[in-house]
Length: 147
Image (cartoon, rainbow, N blue to C red):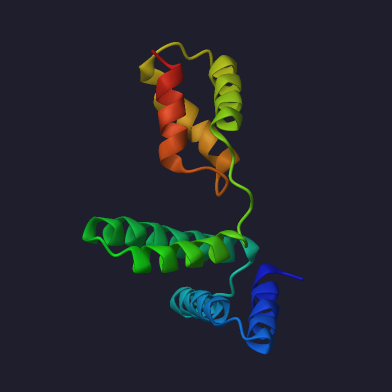
């Protein structure tokens, strides 16, 4: 079963079980997927659906930061719960150590020894961690490894 079908199935289950928050989040996610499909005029595969999920997750994280600054703990907790639901459909994120191991291997393969080679390392590393590690974390790790 592909990811879109899983989302639809879980929506039906949430509706049957009266899980209103899960139902609402899944409806929003499915609407965002449908809108992306209409805009791009193509059917999304699992990778495209994951991109939409990541975008939705990022929006929630930005809202959490905004609500925290505004002193709205009720909204923060709601956004955190929604983020957890969305995150459950994404692959497990890589840890800093896992990213560092990959980065060290690429730095060694390329023979890069200074910060001038960051672009080369990043261009080889990013496709390997796409969707499994935050770009800021990857950049931070690579910059930390190169003097």
